[in-house]
Length: 295
Image 1 (cartoon, rainbow, N blue to C red):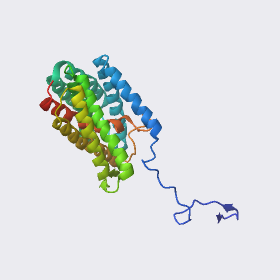
Image 2: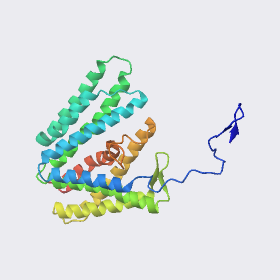
Image 3: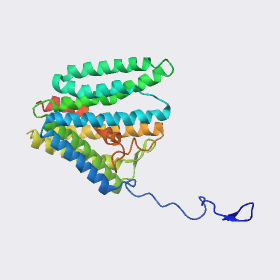
Image 4: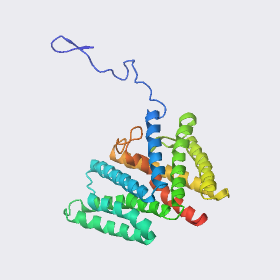
């Protein structure tokens, strides 16, 4: 308590030495686990229903989520006064999975190339001030989301593509779940404290073990591959890419000075906060399955 110029008592905020300390943060970063679990189960159910009814429904769901993620990323970039040419990116986002699914890799390459060109032209029409900055950001979003969405469609293109998508998503989610619980209860040694203070080597070890087990089981069950080493290889690759994808997202958010990309998904943050690991893992899982478990 202090006394102001009129003689009245006024309340002042407690300082760091006033004896009352802020409560320690909860384990798990304060995430509401029941809500996060419910949202995760709902999204998983949506994916499974769309995959195992009409594959094209999954494409539509994926395009919607990618567009929402692109919108979040474009809005976040505005914190650094970066204006991403959004309409051509949305057009490319819708076209790349369809082109990849119906016409293969050639269709995907054509759409991505045309999207890059459209981004450059669209930003040019707004003038030269900040052109290189904004155009570069637009090309980044194209490679980060438009290209990766097409690769997921390539993964789904074979007759057993529904199973391949389940392997890709389940293995990546296993990395998040295994890493979360191992890091929360066993984590002691920081992995990259300057980028993501909560990530630990123990968490990564939990991710690796979970990924290898899930990938090996799903390849045996869904793709009828009774060899152990392809699943182990897919699991190891997935844990690396999922961890790197998460760290890349953390670097982006730190640079932009934000905590989450959005708040659309309760208990998770924004759409991009859920897509980061999947985006980085998609091309690696697609390549490994093409090489070692061809359709």
